[in-house]
Image 1 (tube, rainbow, N blue to C red):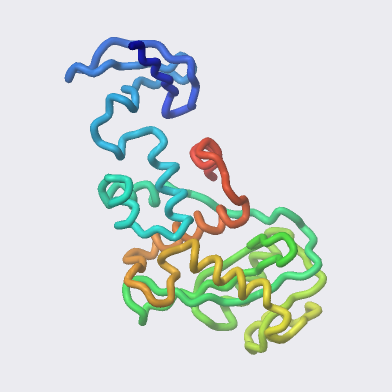
Image 2 (cartoon, rainbow, N blue to C red; image 1 turned 135 degrees about the vertical axis):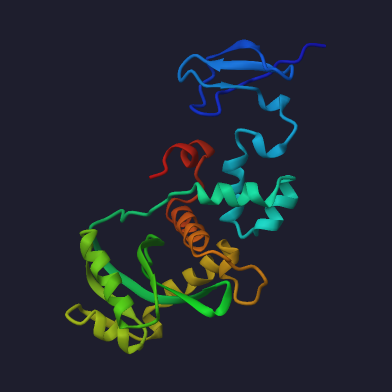
Length: 243
């Protein structure tokens, strides 16, 4: 019985591979003809976390509401591997348009370490396309709202109307814009808040899952927002289109 192995380079995903001797511990070594990377095939790996496609799968599980321990248990890898994959993520969203008819603004409560350490997310959402246009972190106050307004301006985004609830900081912060005030105008972003809480385990209201480090907290949301904006993306895209 003949078994055919299909091997790709873990760095550039090229299938232009040749054998390149053996490792000191006896396993077959391969060399990529394109990027010159040396590696051993996934079939020879004994630890699951070393497989070339494992990082991509970890990221996909993260944006589908799985916690660190859950991923480690299901994939038979260490929690350190899952956290290391998160730390390597550098995703940032950019607006798909420069002109929007209406942007909905709302805030979302999260915490890091303990519930007294609140981290408020304030962001702009476009209901028609389901796009998260821009977001900022900070306290639940007027200064954070002004940070969001400044970020939209820096990104070159303009809109005909701003929709928000009756919170005074929203009304004051976006003075000068045509505003639509009231809960009836923020149905889209309220629904997206539910989507975020399903996508990011750290955002669950009643859960033992929460971030212990601020950096990991922000990276988890960066990854989820990138996923929400772009939908299902291939492992190749996630591996090679980080910014």
